[in-house]
Image (cartoon, rainbow, N blue to C red):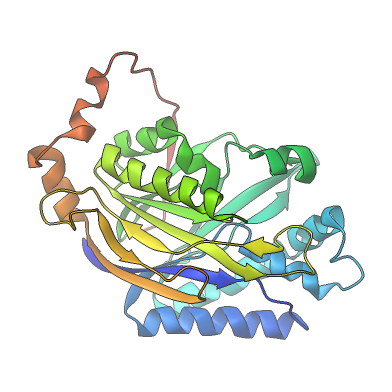
Length: 298
């Protein structure tokens, strides 16, 4: 499939009164994305932190909140896998801290395909908050997901601000970059948005940003959330002049939809008004890129 609709969530972090409330919320969101014609639904970074509210005794403690959410991940992933199959939809689930065998937590985004296959992309560059307060460890591998929709890569929030990560994915074949984000100021939102749009320009690809929105005063992790969902492409022939295919209203929960066409991206890479993707290596100081692992989700 080369032409399809993507849905980017402006996702509120809610105070939940039990697992059933969470399951109902996620199921309703996915159903709305499917009703809107989406083939790909993208949720934000750390949207899963609302699961900490399922344990009122620990939800006000940052470390215990992280542990609570991590422990629920197998159940969360089973739900998303079932919904992807039910609605014939690719779903990037909201990222969450995951405890690994070394005892460290990593920020993991999981991509679920209707085929039943799934893959994981860990965040690779930690923000100051993650380093200094959350004690979240960086991931090690950059992945490319080969799907029925085309080749997708995930650059989580801060990762989108580092061009070599996205560039490595583009050179491996990425046509769409998924950018889940969680920012508590408009400064943060704009850093990620500018990064996403710059990566779309440099790689002549699409970038899909999905943020958390609203306030969750009960949460020590995601108490304030600012941003707007957006779908971006390179500002070139067949695209909007500013590269913005769709943009949500800041702070308002809901889906932002856009139709994207990866054939158009392929055409621009060989015959666009400019050839950023092709000419990358000509810039002085271009360096070897990190390796990319291809994961088959077809």
